Image 1: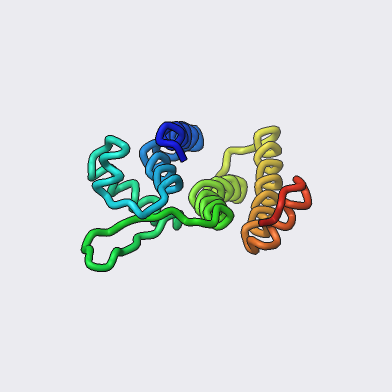
Image 2: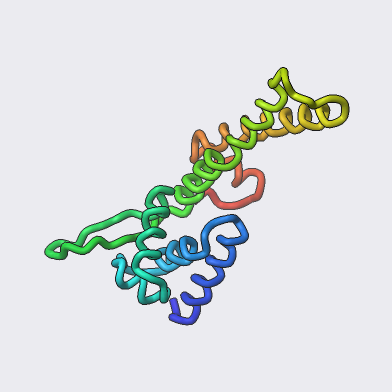
Length: 167
């Protein structure tokens, strides 16, 4: 991949990440690792993205927590190197599971608690809206859980619905 195209991809992925609520630097580090042919060390990442080593280190920790990159070693070298997950489907499912756990599940729990609270001052139209919201979110939760439970089944379902290849 040409150097300029790689740079454009990294910057574009960073912007897209920020739109999705992901730190721009985290998204840029992820993109850099995705387009790198070989493992990169902390210093390489910091220099290529013009970010501090501390920022790069925090980004790498976050990406490892999400399970979308791995730390690798090079024999005879004490430095840590990092690579992106090669399987984009696995990457997608890890991201979706983590976002569901971090964002969707707490939102559903909040709606359920608001409806269950006997001291709630909800009534009339407001209560009806929250009940509808809980029904919708519960249905989406069930669908997401089924979708994220089995990657092969989910890929097959997506292929069926969109005409995409399952590879």
